[in-house]
Amino acid sequence: MTTATPAFTLTEEQQATQRLVLVLQQEQDALAAGQPEEIAELITAKATIIATMATLAEQRHHTLAALNFDASEGGMQSWLDQNGSDTDKQIWDDLFASAQTARELNRLNGVLIGKQMSINQNALQILQGKSQTGNFYGPDGQSSMSTTGRRLGVV
Image (cartoon, rainbow, N blue to C red; front, side, top):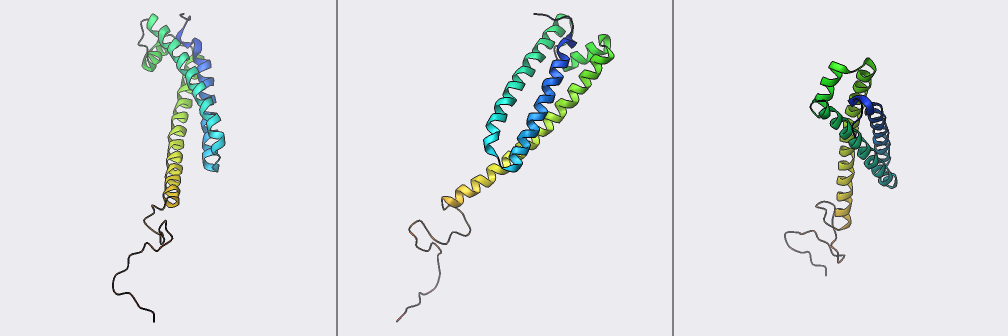
């Protein structure tokens, strides 16, 4: 199915990107607050939005190709420069800005996830007795510290 212009889906794409930004902000809040129960729901929401965005971008790319433009963001910019209205150009600029915001939020969320994974891994190592520091007793309850020198005898 070919639409009239490549700009036909721009408003929907821009709205989807804004929804993605909102979900990424919610994810960041949940990560910062240590609320993992909310994250699974947000991951599902992100996947749905991204699938919608991919479908809309694919429609735009097919339309661009049918009009002999490169099926890419560069092709869209060329089409807009030659044929786009001021409104189309503004929506495209807003879409691009929202996409940049989403990219940065996603990067920051990845950093937060990495930090949380490191904290969890350290806690797990401590619980499993694999910590290099502060582990004075072994699993059998006996001291795991090695001493050098002579033992003191108690008479």
